[in-house]
Image (cartoon, rainbow, N blue to C red):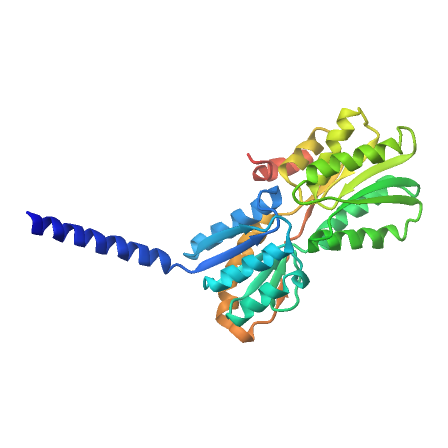
Amino acid sequence: MTRMTFGISLLASLVLSTGVAAAQEKPLLGIVSIAATEANNVRYITGAKAAGEELGWEVSVIDAAGNADQANAAIQNFAQRGAVAVVDMVFPYSSIGAGLEAAKTAGIPVVTWGGGIGGAVSATNGSGAPIALPVIEKMVADLGENASLLALTYRTGEVCRNREALLDEVLAKHPGIKVTKNEVRIPGYFEDGAQYANAWLASNPAGDGNLAIWGCWDDPAIGAISSLRQQGRTDVKVYGVNGNAQAIENIKNGHMTATAWEDSRKEGYDMVKLLPEIIKAKADWQPKAVEVPAVLISADNVAAFIAEHPEATGN
């Protein structure tokens, strides 16, 4: 009886160790996010994970919480763990040089979502400026030539940096629009959006001309909406970018003017599906952008958009 028990235990141990080894043999895909709980980041990660699962890869996400040093450390960590590839979410390639060097030394491709192409980056998508353009153009058309604008910016991320540069470029042609800029934090963007809006509203009372608030992505603008609603201000137009569920709901309810929906789930999915091609090509791979066009959402088309894309509202 003792010998049989030992034999069964040995067999169980072998089966268990074989299963663990098989799990460890799965290629590791590393994802480094600037804010892993932010709605647009969540959608991108969801798409990336779905593609990774289809490829038979293990997907690991590290939240760098808006800190470039943490992003570099995360990429270095994935390189040490022998990841098959790394996805950098939003941190500009110029801010992750140490991580890129570690990945390059280990022969691991790095792709970016909104981080641009440069250094050792193999591909990018989700580039900030093209997605923001339709919203900025609509905002300028809505405001006219004499107006005051609060711009909520964020310069650590390449996406918002590029969107701010585009805003500056467009507004240079409209000198009658007076701009106040405030940079929000990650984390803390909702609170900062509300706080900066309160200060700006105090110096821009109702009836003081055309007024608007623009967020380089939706969430700071949504924070500003909370201040507008608390003060009963209905005279201020609000614009965001990315088209998260809260923004779409705010447009539907008349609290936000427009956003540009970024199909970030598809962006994450498409980027990961491209990785086997990059890995196979090795040094022969030519870096490229694989963009997914944005969709402008406003009161004019929000109902039709929701009907066509119920998943964008979480339904």
